[in-house]
Length: 483
Ligand code: GLN
Image 1 (spheres, rainbow, N blue to C red):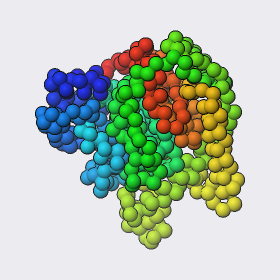
Image 2: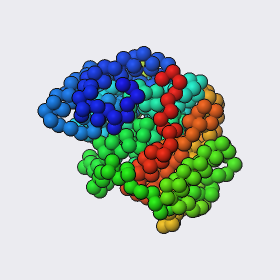
Image 3: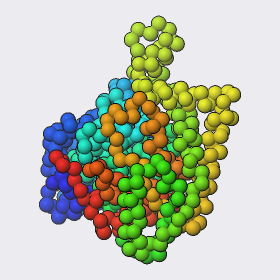
Image 4: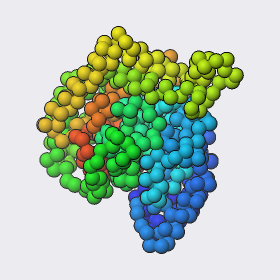
């Protein structure tokens, strides 16, 4: 049962081959058996899952249908879930039970999805390895000595290990696409504003975007359909109609113009990944796509700009965690300053504290113009590069990551080395563009992803290209040994 995709589950439920309750019980048992190796869940919600599954079965018995009706999923633990711990991977929120559901959670529940639990993540979504979680590192099911990527590493490891078919995730600088690449999944970061951020605990508000992690593009289309749409509660949510993503999967790729940026193939890229990227280009050419070399000249400035803007926004967003209103409070505070200092010092982990300090510094008087303003200007240059490129091509293709998943602990003493691994994903967040990572082969037994980027609101085009590629390749069907 656990090998089924969301699409297969929907067909099985419609054909009454099994009930959502049976499937939910089977997956909960599988999680109990296998997750101790991976640590991909922070909380399991068995009771909620079983009641949602029964309700979905009843709705089907009453003649209702829908691709998500009775489908088991999990939420990254930064989507607020009413009455259920929403920890954001932090000691700061270890005791936080959200008083309401995030829009994404509410929408998926209304569509009939069944929530199995809340997945592990880097603390406050800061990281590329899922090692900064208060609840411990997540392991990559392809090799338990390696990281699964971050910050949505729990969602990725769980889906890759077939503990469930799909999960929600968020992407501020790559946290959907990079773990997708590291675990052989398909992951989509939508256009900024496509998916509501209401009830999603903020890391960097101008960059954060929720999206689906699944094994296939077909399943990403199903999950995105349930997540996307205008939300009056989120002032950055965009009031654009949501197309039928599943309907666009089968479009022909004849004449599709794919741009491959020459800057992507510089010194930092593992040549074995470069070769797999070229193979995927050839496969898409066979399907009728036309390949063109393009240039994104400002790409080299993206990492420094992001690692000013994201910490700056984080330092502001995380100021609300002060020991007074939310979460952790230190023991016996002597006075107000002591309360703030110790609650934040004890509640936040090292990487979060580093980001708060960098961000507060970049925003402080005298440094604002030199760092924050400069970074915002680079952000516009990065966006302009993309706008120019999309005058010439329909899709941009390249590696998702410069290297495959590294060993647990390998980059712990060198945060900048970890930041540099985000080089291919961060630009889409700076520009607000949609991006997708899909499986494209293996290096040393570890999965490799290819990233596709498209113009604003062209999620359907990304899913279409990835689906056509997946109809003609079998990388995405490979299963990690032992799962
Ligand atoms: N690795 C990036 C960071 O640490 C991106 C994280 C994310 O997308 N949430 O900021």
